[in-house]
Image (cartoon, rainbow, N blue to C red; front, top):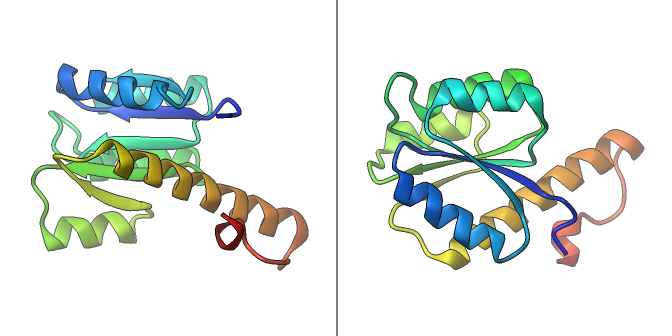
Length: 143
C-alpha cells in the first residue's frame, strides 16, 4: 500500500522519534530517523525521501535552517515542521520557505497520516504538471 514511501524524521528526543516510527510503520512507510540536522542532511545526500517531519527546536541547527538546506538538495521533498513552541512568525517563515504544514505537539496519529497523504498528493500533482503540463483533475480532488 505504501509503495516504498520514504519518510525522514528529525528530532532530538528519542521518544518522539520512536513515536513517529511506530505510527508510520503501521502504514508500512519506510522511516529513517535522525537526532539532528547535520546527520539528517548527510542522510539526505545518500538517499531520496518523499517527506520530512522535522522538529523546530533542535540543538545547533533549527528546523527552519534544515528546511532551507533540504529544499536546496531536493526541492521536491515535502517538509513538515513539528513543534511544541508555535509562534505566528515561525509558522509564516516555515510556509514561506516551502513547508507543507506546521504540526503542533502533541499531535494525533490521524494528523500524521493526513499530512503524509496530503504531502504525497502534492508530490504527485507536481510530478504530473512537470510531465504533462496543465492537465486534468488533481489527485486531491479524487482522493
